[in-house]
Length: 169
Image (tube, rainbow, N blue to C red; front, side, top):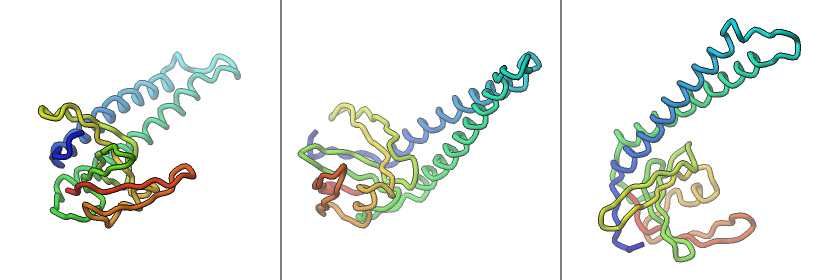
């Protein structure tokens, strides 16, 4: 990946917000369908071994909890969008790139949502993948407070790896 790649934090946050909002819509519909299946009159148990309604209610409850988690995550992302600040220090809401083993990675630091990915199509550079990196993960917690050019060694899966921060927005 070219060293001059520059991403827009607003564009990255907007892309993640669209992704999370889509998940919320899909899960809400799925939870609604599971709830209807659990409460429909045809779902009444025919005997003590018929657990369809109970299973559907558990599914609806689990999906509802996930929707609430995603809504909280969306609110967090919206806060990063409206609270955009210029800082050279890695903090929650920072968009940064780091290099490890000669590979450049793009991440958005967040308190939750670790592992969620999105891809931005940059005309000049092609597709660039950006991942949410949780501030409580081993790497995320070590990157907090660093600046572009800083290096850190982190033990991941019983192996020490070096990371160099390339840019922070």
